[in-house]
Image 1 (cartoon, rainbow, N blue to C red):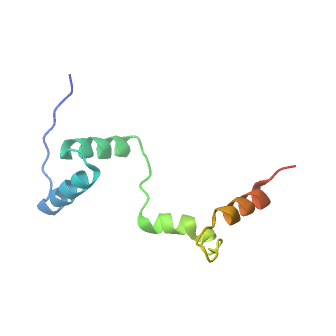
Image 2 (tube, rainbow, N blue to C red):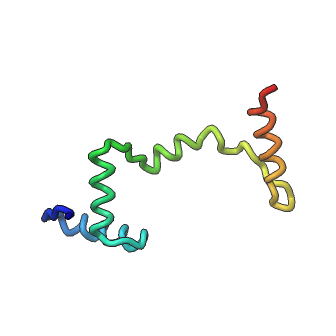
Length: 85
């Protein structure tokens, strides 16, 4: 059987929790369980700035052609940079 806990959180945090849970299509309880699990297992939380920093090396690396199809160009660059003989 699952254990039950009760906690109090500020109203602003509860509103954020409700919005996040609704966006993800889960209950607030499930959102709290996921957050607690991530916290106690030490999973790092990436903020938007950290995500942006990790993508900076790729900014501007692909240009779209007139048709807007960059898949062939992306495939070529992957082969050029990662191909091992």
